[in-house]
Image (cartoon, rainbow, N blue to C red):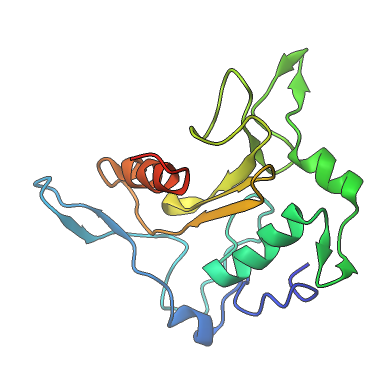
Amino acid sequence: MLDPLAMKDTSFHPDDRLRERFAKTYKTAEDGLGLVPGYNPFVTPDPTVRHMTEPSGGLFSTAADLAAFYQMILDGGMHQGKRILTKEAIAEMTKPHEAGDKPLNYGLGWQCNLPDKPVVKGFPANSFGHGGAFGTHGWIDPDRRLIAIYLVQNVLVTGGGKTRDLFHGLVNGQP
């Protein structure tokens, strides 16, 4: 999927070119005042350290590459006039599924807002997205044809989710 979308800055196993561009990871300082560099087991300057490829995590990317992927999803599987995924596949991936007749906030690889239980406030019930490691988040609102991508590197940052919530509020025109 990376090649058809020209996602040249996305990889499970980043090379030196990508490693030198990694954002540093931060955590809350021991005294609770400010941020200090944090340990991130996935980000290391040692190129010989390789992690197992996981379908649910470990993919390194950029906002531009993620925007291409999210736009293809928003466009029903199309990218620059070429079919990448079927509309049916997109619909199945991005709809809430059930377990034991109980509606879940999950599709296939995507979190989904439910009318009575939104994952991301301010977005409609048919919106969906995906959270990533260390606070990253992307969300799609098909009604407004809106993509929101929030990239950050934090681990154990006190109140770290507040900035993501603020970002989503601003995207949705909320103070």
